[in-house]
Length: 396
Image (cartoon, rainbow, N blue to C red):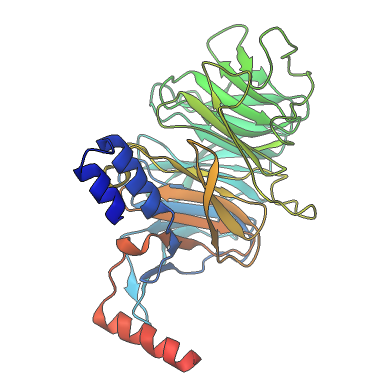
C-alpha cells in the first residue's frame, strides 16, 4: 500500500490505475465477517439470493425447503458473542397454502420497486409476490421445470425471462399476466438468462447444450449471435456445443456497462465476452473443479462488484461458486483468481453483492447464508476484541 501511495504521489501511476490497484488490494482480503452474521433460517440447500436494487437493504433467500425468507440487513440483534445477528423479518413458510410445491430455483426483487418480487420453481411456475403482505399476486404456468429467471433493470418493460428445461426462453408479461413470447433458444434446455442493463430488449441465455446466445426480442429473427462462433458458422439453436464455454452454461450475467457478458460453464470455466466481438472470449479463467462434483451442472448464481461504486472505483471483481465449498474471486480484467473464500460445509450455489457496503452474501447446499467483507470494513468494539482474545486464549 505504501508503494501504491508513493507511485501516485510522484506521478508514476495514474489516478485510475491507483484506484484500481487499491480496490483490488481491498477486495482480495475479503474474509468471513466477524461482527455480523445471518441467523440460520433454511433447513435445506439455498439456491438463490437477491438484494434489492433501490436501497440495497433488503435481501431474499430461497431454495430446496421451498420457504422464502425476507431480511432487513440493517436490522440486527446483539448475540452473546457481541456479533450482530440478522434474522428474517418475515417469511413464506414451506407449509403455506400458496407457496411453491417443489424446489424454488430462483428469486429476484422487482428492479424498480421494492414492493414486489418474483420466484421460479421446479413445480413449473413463475410466481409474483407482494413483499408487504408476502402473498402471491399472480403466477405463470410454463409446464416444465424452471431453472432461473430475471427482470430488466431498466424498467422499460415488465417482462420476466424464464429459463426452463424446454427448448424455449419464456417471456412472461406482468402487465397482461400471460406468456407474451417464446424464443427457440437451446435444444437441450436453458439454464441461465440475463437482461442487458443498458439495452432493455437485449437478453443473454446459456444452455445445457453448451451454447451462449444473445437476443434482441423485438426482432423477428431474434438471435443476434452465438458467442464463440464466427458469424458464418452454424448458430441455430440446434447447432453444436461450444468447447470454449466449458460444458453446460450454469450462470450468465452482464457487466455494469452492458458491453460484456460473463459466462460460467459446468467444468468451472469462466469467460468474459465482448458483445462487439463475440467470436472468442476476451478473458478466460479455469477453476479447479473436482471430477466428482456436480454442483455446477445446474443453474448457479454469480455476483459482480459495481465498477461505479464510490469505495471500489474502476474495478470489477467476480465472485462465483467454484463447484466446491468455496467462492472464487476473479479479476475480470485479466482472468486472475485473486482469492478463494472458504467457510461453507457443502458446495456453494449462489452469491449476491451488496453495493456501497463492501459485503458479499453467499449460500449453498449447507443451507447457511454467510457474510464476507474486507477487514477494513469492520470495526470491532472493545468488548468484541476482548471476546475474540479470550476465544484465542481458550483454544491454546
